[in-house]
Length: 217
Figure 1 (cartoon, rainbow, N blue to C red):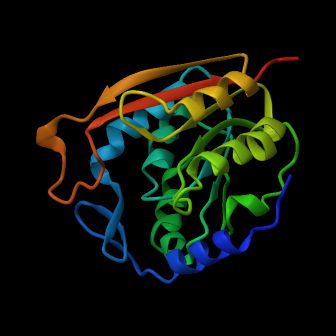
Figure 2 (tube, rainbow, N blue to C red):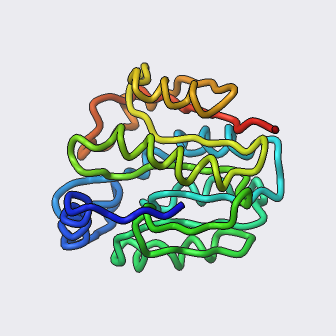
């Protein structure tokens, strides 16, 4: 169910959208900060395989469009539809056309924060979540997204994944996954050091690819 954004999130959204978006040879920048890299293509391929690898014709929801790398990686897996939620209009302007040309299915881009989404219940088969929340709100936003958006809109057996830098999930995320999903796993993925771009901003080249499944009852 959609929620009303509080002043902290509204201010954060205004600040993000005021940052100019730019794509260069390394990735996507908002202002002076890289937020996604082309070097993450192999990582996004692992997310795509976890979410869609054995199911064609999936209805996919991505929270945070970024460079569109995840969307490109799901193209060979023949999704039935793809919906992206990206609140930064300039990011959408840079990326959406390329995604529409690349994906072999209907594409919808929602230029709003995910908190105001109002999707049909049990209409989505796979969700990829990767956002830039206000400082200090990452875990609370994650919990809210899973409870208010992911669980209601996922079909029984639907899958949920999210971006995670590092080799261990925080306890708060583990608790959310254990509470809302009957089963989940996390696979380690490493981007080799010689493939990391000069502007790399992540704390490590090590990542986890979590995949949680909604119960079937």
